[in-house]
Image (cartoon, rainbow, N blue to C red; front, top):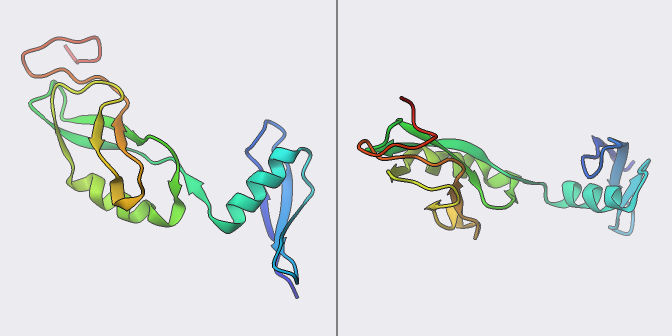
Length: 131
């Protein structure tokens, strides 16, 4: 018997409840999708799920002690625990600008970790800094 995975598609607002499985020939099959994007999403999610990681990194000499960060693009879901371990060790030095690379090629994924907020230094002022 071929095991099917049920998943909710997030490729469009429809939120189709799809069944995805690998058939006897090795091809990934997707059923109960409404659009082509559902097939693409179902195959990708079944074979190699990808995610964007968001977190916080510690900041030295900043108006706050942490700064929000995210991966610049999606990374393999299996790499998330390793990425989070690395993030726990990262310390950025203020000032930090939105989009600034905080950690390059995180966990060997080829994807950079970037700041998603501006962070002023202790002596600077910024719209993001706490009074």
